[in-house]
Length: 210
View 1 (cartoon, rainbow, N blue to C red):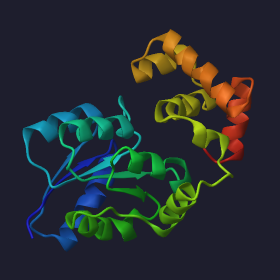
View 2 (view 1 turned 90 degrees about the vertical axis):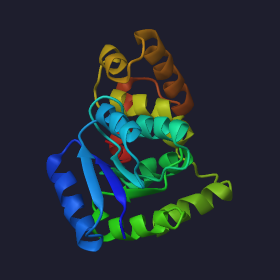
View 3 (view 1 turned 180 degrees about the horizontal axis):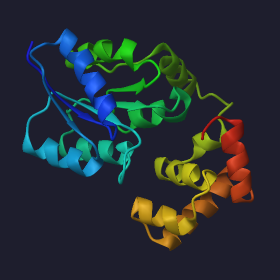
View 4 (view 1 turned 45 degrees about the vertical axis):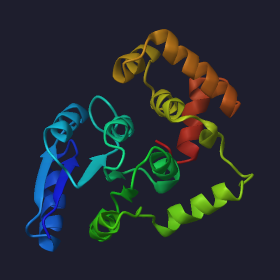
């Protein structure tokens, strides 16, 4: 089976390892790799790809931002998002944004081939853990965590604030104005019923979000 797969990850060793895993199963696959979101978007518009495998955290634009842009240009292109973060943090967000699956890097060696086969059939790759979260969401789970009330962009800003980043640094990283980031910060504190950056950091640590 000849398929074209584009892998986006800022670590060359990850790209090489995934390429080898995929080649073992699909020897004729055409596989290319890029190290950042800008290169990813350029490569996508230059050639045809059957599947894109993209890391959530990359230099510049996040994988989530890249996913949104890809789905705007190519709505039917399957995109698998991989991350070192647990499913509880991002899986539902990336699926809502149009991803075909979410792969935790701790289990990607077991899941990557199954995920590729699944999306080639036009389906989404859903792990049992994500399926449970989706079921809870459909049932209107009342035990929603405060951070789950945040929008995708608010969650990005929350994580950076909790990690100790200054508002000006966040503005530069996300290509936003300082005023916009400050507005996001105020909205985040209000939604989560917290009062300071220190509270955000404590909450993130308590819930294994950073």
